[in-house]
Image (cartoon, rainbow, N blue to C red; front, side):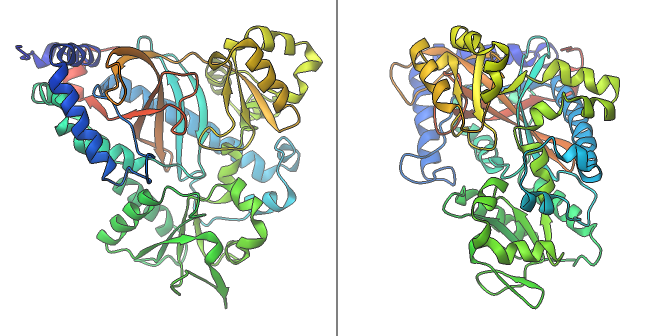
Length: 462
């Protein structure tokens, strides 16, 4: 098969199609290639133990440079809105009432951070239509934003993918670096704090029995490679003495890279008091601070369209929210407006989510269930702090999974995660699913992401 192409004529969609055609013509070789990648993953940092390892597919996500520029614009617009909402929360007691936070959490949110970044790290997950550039928000991840190393490893092993190597020399394809760039962004934020040390001691902190531990140790190694001492710590195993927060090994912690999500901290509040006291007394730099919960909590979906928010946003920002934020309701209140019968009947149009969760725990999409199952699930979630949201049908692309027979092409739903470091777009996390929910614990496949550099896509438009 002649794979020679003219660089000036290719775009991302064409390249993706050519890779698919190559796989169809070389099924046996591509199956062996897929098995090599799977075997590598099983023995890599992407295996969390046993059968819990990253599943991938041979057709990577490939974007034209104009699309990457659009992603950057989406991040810039969204982050600017985040900053205004957080500022309003910090300044206006009435605005705070829009969020269902406890007094203990509100106190933590209002603490000064010592740096200007509202949300040092987040991943803005969107349903993006690659044909026309339209999109809808899925969710905003701040606490515990992860999978940077997953991206790295999947990109690193693309050389094992014969369907990719057949074409990689014909295109000038870029990749995203998400591990060292995050460490650089974290250190930049920390060094803006008064009294910051040139080389701080960093604690990578979570409830380690819930953590993506292998990625934590990757970050630990990369910090140390930059000459920065770092330690993976369980948030419950710290001590606080004489104004110093101490790690389990006895080191004084200067800066915390927080991966523990706020909801878990508040549930275990009494057991993490050394950490809490150090933060309250300003004796450790916390990245990210508790004010990130304003964006992470599902209440943000309703707050963004509240009249009090509309006043602080520009007309253009309000239009942006109107166009891209799925309609959201408190599940317990939908019976008041007669919406409940429509939710039962038009199940494919709806998804329900806990107000404060992560990793798609407790999330249900109507498209995945029969009418009777859906009604039972909805009824069971009343009184359980759930929201109801319009279901955004994801953009579908073709791929093939060699981890399960029969080996055949099918359409997969796409979810695009936009990594945001200190308010700037840094990279893309690409996930696919053959179901209504795209989540690691259910049916997710993660693929490498590449983009065609500007000189090869300068004629492309969204």
